[in-house]
Image 1 (spheres, helix red, strand yellow):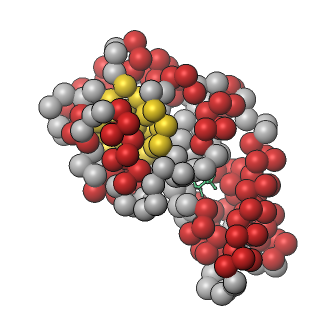
Image 2 (cartoon, protein in one colour):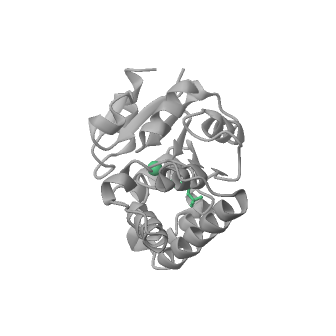
Length: 218
Ligand code: BG6
Ligand code: MG
């Protein structure tokens, strides 16, 4: 079956928000007196807000209301930091690939666990390059469950076999594989090695080359 659409993760694929997430979690962790390193932040790639907080708390049990307050506080910091995001922050190659996809008449969706995804693509100036947005509000079961990508494919009116998922997180690659998608992993093999095609970044990646690499696996 031929590829008719692409589903892109956002954070770490189209822009590098990991640093902003790190700064926001670090500020919260400092306030709570909990040690939190950049390495620990790496493990939160693709992990939803609530699970990220539970990992940061390292087993500390807190009432539900406190968890909610801490998530809101972290998100407030994150929103403060992402005000700095502008079209200059689209990662190299991403805008070109999205433009290629449109020019070729293929479809593109966003498939991000983030509840801030719409705001981020607006700030990046790439919102109008997507036919559909699946974000942190779209499904209940988060990555590594396939639900978010399946929802994105439904919005595009395509089957998983007709879509390529582009992901930078281990949980995201697993989610896409579980959904029956062809997967392009962005980053080191230790993180995304299970993907069908692994690329260091999207820099210089053009649609024809990518479709040729993906075709071997479809
Ligand atoms: C993912 C990020 O895209 O979104 C995670 O990789 C983040 O680090 C998750 O925790 C949820 O984001 P948000 O913006 O809803 O807190
Ligand atoms: Mg990501």
